[in-house]
Length: 249
Image (cartoon, rainbow, N blue to C red; front, side, top):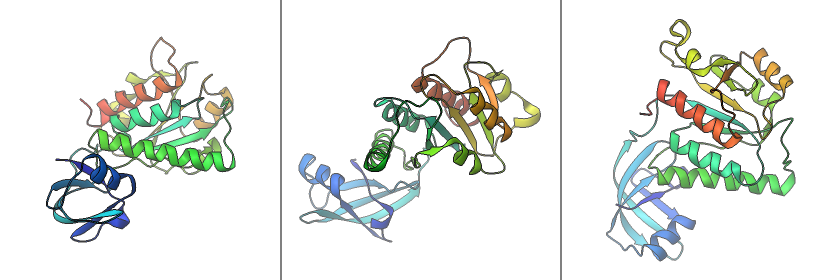
């Protein structure tokens, strides 16, 4: 069954409206017709089954026949705070972490970030990143779309952290082995709080940034003896944490 993303505002009690790129895919690429059954997700964790009731010039009206909460979401609320990398690496980071099961992504402007986004470029890049998250969620059959938050400074990110959470800082210059932190049964026998992973850009986190994060309870951790690229480190850390505390594996 073909599956489509519908904005929550285009969902009603027993009907949905498919528009824009999803409508083009339905009508022009797949050439579906009235009466065909399809699947829908709204990005909030709900899945729907429906039938195409009508196809208009720029939209398709869907009659909803059933709904359920998706079983594909992890019980772990895991956020990746990623230092802004060069080129299109951020797109890969968003795509792959969405597949792993990340809950949200926070792009950060850090001391060693080479790229600086301003004005229209910042807005356009944010739209592009969210679109990548939508496409990745659709591909891996998630019903929840991880929000890609606005690009922000480390200070803003730390100030907005919830009171009760875990903040892990993979750092190539040293830290407690991640395995040891995860296996600390006194503190984390059963994790029920949000978990955040802070990753630096190319060149890593500056020592002062790590110290600042530690003031907010951040835990510097080591991912092992090998130095990983920025697009690798966050994904590896997320996968390990999701395996230990989430539903991966």
